[in-house]
Length: 518
Image (cartoon, one colour):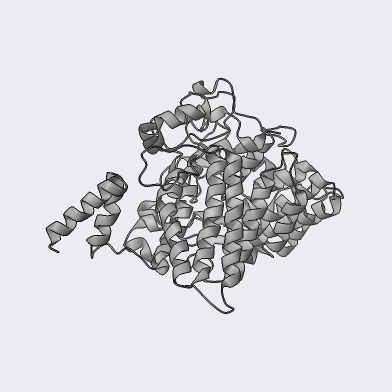
């Protein structure tokens, strides 16, 4: 058959069988593009997926960090400092983009190709990353597109409720464990996994159990909440900070593209106008709850102002009321709102070096989650043990994976953890949630914002916290509970479905999400 006749035959068949939209598949199959391979080895895809996972969280941290009172802007009037949003912009939509575009089909292909090539570890990794990504996506936005996601033949997509997304993520955790259990002893997929766990399947399994614990904890306000399930999966997860899930960056790639490096680093120059919050610094100075106790992590993570004192910024205040000598310094070790020339990071520490790894799940985070679950259950002994482990894990996390400004001695760490103001005979909800707040700065701000919304920004739980006084005008006097869907996909192409969930309302970002309700 001549090529032209073959093409005509395919087109007619498409029209008769399934309509024009599905013709593309038949044409692509018949006339494969040699420069666009149909199957790409998971070894080549997984590193990019892992990198983009960090990208989604770190980009959106610029907004959610303000919501969670982790950091604030050096100029007043910022929309996010006022718990608002940026109309007509994708600011706050990077996790959405990363999940549906950078991760989505790529993860589906990794799962498919891992199964087809008898490399179950790849399928497990695909399911595990998908599970956490779905969880954090719905944490962030509330209703999201689940059932109709990744259907390329559609132009509009219906939304699913948050509980359905969590159920789906739990199923993906089970699928991940199933495939990891099929991986033979000693097998390795280190080539594709070089920026995460270097092919360590046991750590991947622990990571998956940790994700499962977080998902079960999202039911905290529900009558179906199962503290024992949270505790069970935390116990199956990380054993120490050595298991922390860190996405790594390769400094050697700077010559090719600085976009391959840490979003928080000076070479990317994204955080010059941000400073730690007053709420965070006051907690670490013992000025609000841990009375009179200075946290050794304070001088490890931050540089003091010119006058030698540690300070943070109130929300929507900027530098108003500060002098040059009292202004908090930036995260790169300078009192400027710009990055050093050439993005040199020699004055930066911890999470703000150009190649510093970015955590997406840690032993410390999980132990504080376990402590809260045990406290809700009434198991005070387990709560205290997990609380102490969370504290110790935070110190180990910092000193194992990062460098600081002022060294933390073992004595200083032990004295801090043993101090009755920090660790009384019976730990309370305040102790757990406030130390979790400090310990997860700034990598776990998405998880911290989940916590603050679960307690509806309760100032009894979050002692010393004061919501911003001047809220964004669209809020109607209400605090933020979700981030609006990504503008350039949803508000341009999917307007009818947005209307169905109320996302066209100016105050949509203040509507409480499912996990905040009884």
